[in-house]
Length: 499
Image (cartoon, rainbow, N blue to C red; front, side, top):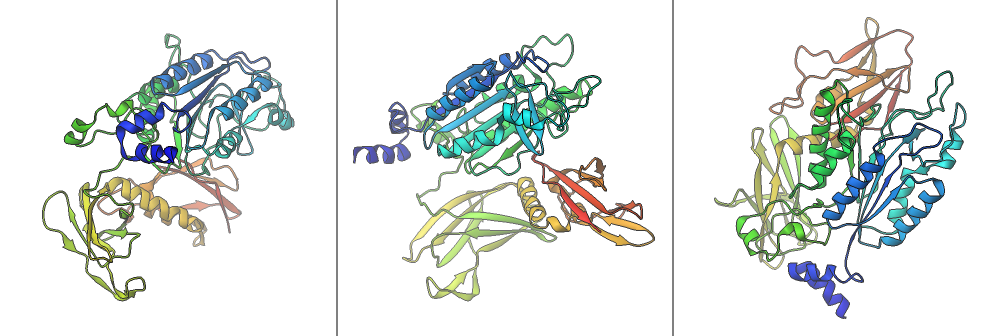
């Protein structure tokens, strides 16, 4: 009974939350494992991986993590370290895994190389697999421990470590493969994008002890009020700009399957009065992860959520409310009158009354705002208002990304018209969610970049009159593969289209 009360109070009271963290038996905690491998025996040694691990360890300690630092791990030591990491995390914890060293991709799977990995050559992929640590397996282990949040960081996107002059290298490539199929609650970030390599330094005069990615990422992690996605976006921008100064392309990518907004150094700045009422600064909270939300005026576990959809006439906003409702009203901002959404010509079987219309329309040029929503429950009581954030740019990208995922079979289409053409009109229509399109002609490896017109938020689906939405192909072409890099840096699966 006492344990149950402690957990309940931890949810509702800031002071009790902090006190609960001091009781290891009941509190969620932060645990990190950072690994840096420099001293490889059979492949090229590295100079900064150990420093990167130490820097990340120090950074995570500042953020309230219990940190395990492992250096120059051979295969056996790596396995023992991962076992110790398993034992250190419990259900509901946040786990942070960082690896700096050589990584290698084989057939779409990422392997982290221990220091005693053999010098494999062509046809010896199994040697690498057997001697290395599969990145996906680390995620599985954390899932088995039922952690609430798993954060994985890989500063391992370097050149192929098995390349040797005069020999043919083991089948694989420099850098790591995108991890697009992450389970819920997992966030991963890579120091470089697909087919890119990560810089250890910017020039011979660069005396920074850390790689370009780690020095930037560690700094961004400590920025107060930034969630993980914001940290990743800022890191990507800064690293890309640094790499451009030496004419190198390095754009870190991240893959996000988080349910909550996770803040490692405090919540975003809230309303002044809310901040003034806090007995402790929010960044000192030890419980994790807090959720970024606007607090409604009255508490409810059934606060509405919203889905935003862009069309030629503007925005459609559809509210989802778990409770049966007798009426829905809304307004933009903190002042003004609430407007009823009206009713549909159908009965709600739960209330046996007309179903409230769950959608409203916004103009195409609607600015970012907070939509206040309230509803009448079956007891006739008014619930809310509940705030819902509307960010037009983010909503447009999210809506178009969802459409692209659902219509992958329509990305390309062949047509015989004065020769063989392949149309990518569909991709042009939803280009606001796309950063880059690559195609491969009669190849499973997309290596040609398609040019898309810039996104026009005022009319995002329209295709400019001067755009050419097709490629001319040789008559003997049999197939085209395509890969999308989305605006958030994630990469789609490679889709193949045959005539």
